[in-house]
Length: 266
Length: 286
Image 1 (spheres, each protein chain N blue to C red):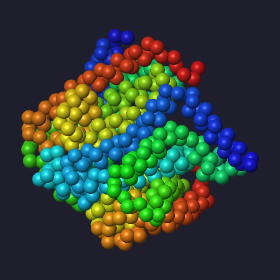
Image 2: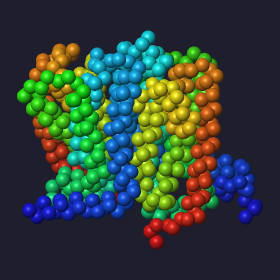
Image 3: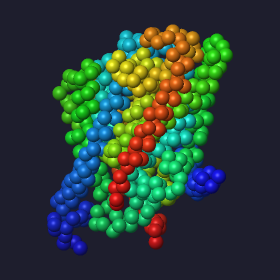
Image 4: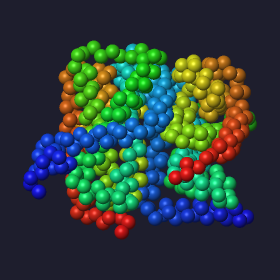
C-alpha cells in the first residue's frame, strides 16, 4: 500500500507540474496528437500518386496504420518515457532512483508522467475505428477477439522495444539516437504493408524482430486476406504470443542492465 | 572603445571588419570541436539515419512501382532514392531536431552570461551552429549516401552546376534552420517554458520540410503556397530537389534564390526577436 501511495505521489506531482505551464501543456497535448495526424496524412498523400502500395488499397493501408498508431501511442504513453534513461545514466541521477525503496522502472516512468500524450492515444484508436468501419470485415467471434487484443498486444510489443532500446544505455552510455531506429523505426516499419520492403530488410525487422505481428498479420487476419508472403491465415492470432516473447526478453535485458549499471560518479 | 584592433574578440558593425571575421571563424571552430567530442553519438545517429533511409526508400519505391508511368510527382526511381538517402544524410547537418540550448539558458537564467559577451547572441549561436553543421557534413552526410548507393540505384547529377548549387543550398538551409530554431527557442523569453513551440516546430518542420514525403506529392497549389509563404520547404525539400535535378536549370536556380531570400528574412526575424526580448528580459534565477 505504501508503495502505491508513493507512486501516486510521484504521478500527482507530475500533473501539478503540467498544470503550472498551462499553455505549453496545451500545445504539447495537441502537438503530440499531430504526430499521429501526420503519420496518417503521409499515407493519404502517398496514395494520391498511386491506387495501391505493395498490393494494398488505401483503406487496407489505413487499417494497418491504425493498428500500428493505436498500439504505438498506447505504448509511448505508458512506457515511452523510459528513453530518458540515458540522460539519467549519463548524469548519474540513476543512483538516486536505485537507492529509493521502490522499483526502478515504475519510478522512471512516473518521474515524467506523459499526460500530454493522452490525446494521441485517443486519436490512434479513432483512426483504427474508422478503418474498421470502412473496410468490409466479416465479423466472426475470433476476429472480434483479435480486434480487441491486437492494439493491446501491439502496445505491449512496442513497450518491450522501448525498454530494450533504453536499456542499451546501461552498457553504452552514449548510445544517443540508436534506440529510435527500433522504436520510431519500428512504428514506421509497421505503418505499411510489409510487402513493400526488400527481402533481407523485411526478414530482419518483420520476422527476426517480430514487427510483422504488430499490425500487418493481424490486419490480414481481420480482412480475411491470404498473406502474399506465404504465412498461414492464423498467423495474425500469434500476435499475443510474439508480444509475450518480447516482454520476456525486455524483462531479462532490463534486469541484466540494472545489475550491470555502474554509476558515472559525477 | 573606438580603437579596438583585430586581437579583441568581438563582432560589431563599428569595430574592424577583420576582427569580426576572425572572431566568427573562431566561434565556428569551437562549435565544430564541441560536436566532434561526441564520437559514439555520431555513430549511433548514423546507424539510425541509415535504418530510416531503408524504411522511407522502400515505401517510396513501392509507391513508384504502382504509380502512373512509375513517376510519382515527377520523380523517377533513381531520383526518389537520391531524395531519400541525401535527405537522411542532410538531416543532422541541417539539424532540425533537438536544439533547446537557448530555451534552456533562458529558463535557467544562464542567458545573462551570453548577453554580457562582446558578441551578439544571434551571431555567436549562428557561428557555433555553422561549426556543428560543418562537422555533420564531414561525418554524418557520407555514410547514409554510401549505404543508399550500395543498395539502390541513385541519380547521378547531369548538369555541372548541380553540385555547387547543392552546396550553396545546403549552406542556406543550415542558416534558415538555425534562424527558425532561434526564433522558436526565443519564445522562452516570454513563455519561460518553450516546450510547446518546440513541439510544434519539430512536427511542422519534419512534415512540411519534405522529410516524410516529397512535397511535390501534395496538390500543386498547396506546395507553391508552402514554398513561398513559409521557410519550411527551404529546409530539406529545396536542397534535395536540387541534387535530384527534379526541375529544369531555371527553376533549380530559382528555388535556391528563394532560399537566399528566406535566409535573410529569418535572420532578420531572429535579430529582431532578440532585441525585443532584451528590452523586456527579467533574468531568471535571481
